[in-house]
Amino acid sequence: MKAIKWRDLSGEELEQRVRELTEEIFNLRFQVSMGVAKNPARVSLARKDLARAKTILRQRAAGH
View 1 (tube, rainbow, N blue to C red):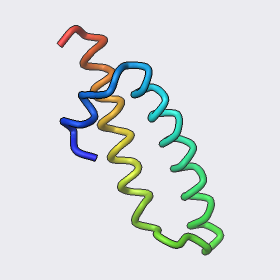
View 2 (tube, rainbow, N blue to C red; view 1 turned 30 degrees about the vertical axis):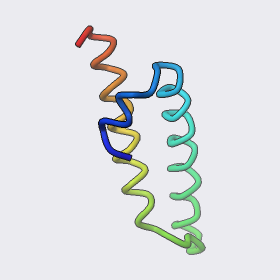
View 3 (tube, helix red, strand yellow; view 1 turned 90 degrees about the horizontal axis):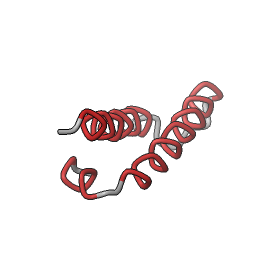
View 4 (cartoon, helix red, strand yellow; view 1 turned 90 degrees about the vertical axis):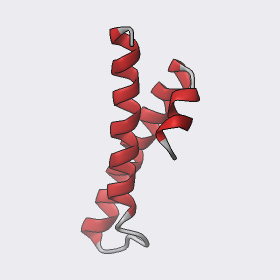
């Protein structure tokens, strides 16, 4: 998802996505370690999405 679409989400939606992405990263890392991950590259994409969401939440908290 592009950063512009992330900014369109409300604060509550962003916090929900942060929780979902954190859980997804945990599960994906577990699958990769077990050797059963269908798409190991998804870990890095999920981490980038998580960073985007957290950055936007921090920007909003700072008043930007």
